Image (cartoon, rainbow, N blue to C red; front, side, top):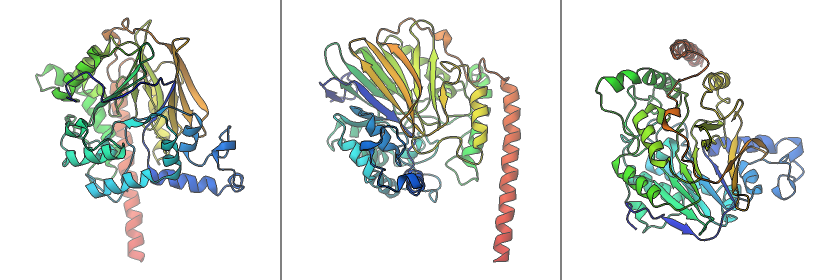
Length: 443
């Protein structure tokens, strides 16, 4: 099948009523958390099996909680694997293969996959691509693509193995109960930010420093847009043509667009489409007439509901952090203040979750509505919203906020705050290095 047609890569005629989705799965963190929970007293009486665990009290692995929701299919929205920390820069191909193999061998995950009626599908983000924050500059992209497709059990002869990227689409159901899922690849063709990320470098705290450089890039974006600079690309023209054909030929009642990075956030610290403003607006123009359109995203290590427009709102659901959240690292206390500072894009106050999480999309075909849930590690619903299944033509382009727009503190003030935070982190790093140096001398 040609990658330029609007036909889906895979078609399932049976109707779906529940899809589950999530991102950011670090196998080692998941295993460490499982050992911790297993050692607790309440989990020592063989009560870790999910059959009699409706309240999630005895859950030791998030795949048990996801399995209890009994979805028809699982949608990866990015970062299915993370390489060990010993690998700096671009991850070796063999290391990626080993990590995929070990993830597939997780007992709870393999059992979950076997129980799905329709299977697993998805796209990648930077970590399963092989390098933190990486884009088109990544080496050996074809080999990395094939490993990811192997992980999803895509046929060796599939046309998808000839594409410049892992973008793809699937359709579930038929007639008036059809769901189309379009997965975008935001890595293969993506240009660098104005100030390139240091996350994949050997610079200490490179990923933290990159939050600062993204903020700097966003601050200067207006200068870039008015000074005649070449506008950075996210998808690449081939993928854009493919997406346009997928949209134009869709007759589905529900259309799900999956982007590994957030599309509508106003938070300039995280990777997002907002750093590629022209690409962001082009995406919204492309999908604005789709019936029952909803965006899914990952990457940021928290969950969030984002919406724009009036009447039929365009909804983006971010579920990120199957095994970890943004509040876990030593700088985790900054997570909530940053999210509270950048909230103008959020569907309602408090529409975010700072726990390990996954999402479900429940479809009621009789009532013609869909319910979106964000669940915590134990499977409890933390935030929920319901949307009618109907055309979303009434939301308008001028409602799409830019990075930093209409938030609680001035953009310039946040830039200064981040600069102070960066100085603090660098001093902390310097202090830690001094401690390490003293320990070495003593030994």
